Image 1: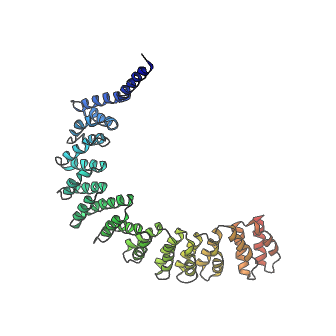
Image 2: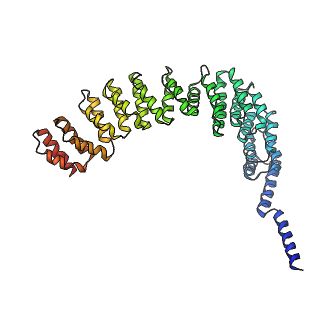
Image 3: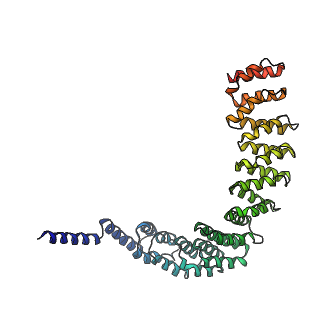
Length: 408
C-alpha cells in the first residue's frame, strides 16, 4: 500500500471511529433502556420512583413516553416530573402540554409548575386560559408559571385577569407580573418593566407587599428620574408606603438623593426626622452632614440625638467641631450623644482637633477633651495632659493625671 493510500485509509478509519458512540454513551443508553423497562413494568413504587430519579440526568426523548404516562399517577406524578424536567428534548414540552389539558387538581398544578420551570413559551395560551379555572390553586399556579415565561402575551393575560380577580388570587397574579417585570429588567429593558410596576402600584386595595414591591421597582428602574416618586412615598400618610420609601432610599445611589433626603429633614415632624436621619447615616454620604448638624443643634431632643448619631456614622471630621459645641448642651441626652459620637469618630484628623481644643480657655471644654483623649487613646496627646497637670483648676489637674496615666 502506498503512503498516500495508507493516509486515506487511516483518515477514513478515524472518521468512522468518531461517528461511533463512546463507551460512556453506550453505557448511558443501556442504562436508560433498563430504567424505561422498569417504568413500563409492574415494579413497585420504590423501584419506579428510583427509575424516575435516575433518568433525570441521562434521559433522552426515548424516556419521555414512559415518564409522561406517570403524570396521571397520584403517587408517582411528582417523580415523573422530576425525571422529565431536565431532559432537553422538546418532546418533553409536547408531553406536558398534552397532560395539561387532561389532568385536574393537584396533578394539573404540578404539570403547570414543570411548564414554568422549562420556560415553554408555546404553553402561554393554555396557561392564560387556566387563569379563569374554577380551581383557585390551578389559577394561582398558572399565574406564577406565566411569570416565569414572561412573554408579552403572558403579561397581557395576567393584567386582564388581575382586573377582576378575587382577593385570594390577586397576590399570585401580582407575583406573576413581578416576575415578568424582573425578566424585562434582566434583559436590559427597563421601560416595559416600569409600565408593569406603575400598574401594580396603582391597584386599589393592593396587599402591602405588592404596594412596596411596585413602588420599589417603579422608583429604582427610573434611576435619578425616580427621585420625585421616592419623595412622594416618603411623604405618604400610608405608613407601609412610607416605610417602603425609607428602604428604597437606602438602595438609591447618588449625592442628589442624599441632598433631597437632607432637605426633607426641615420639613417633616420629629418622628420622620428620626427615620430620615437613620437613613442618611446608613447611606454614608457626607453631602447630608450640614443638614444633620443643623437638626442636631435645635429642635426635638429625640430627633437631635438621632441626627447626632447619623452625623457620626458618616465618619467625617467636619462633624467634630459642631459636636464639641454640643457637649455643653442643656439637654443631657443631646450632650451624651455628642460625647459618644466624638469618642467613636475615626481618624487622625479628629484626634488633631481634640488635641487642639485642649488649649481652650474654657475649663469645662478642657475637661471634656481630656476625657476624649482618654477614651480615644490618643497617644500623640500625652504632652498636653502633662502640661495640664499644673492647671489652676483642681478638676482639670485631676483629669489630666488620669488621662496621662491611662495613656502611659
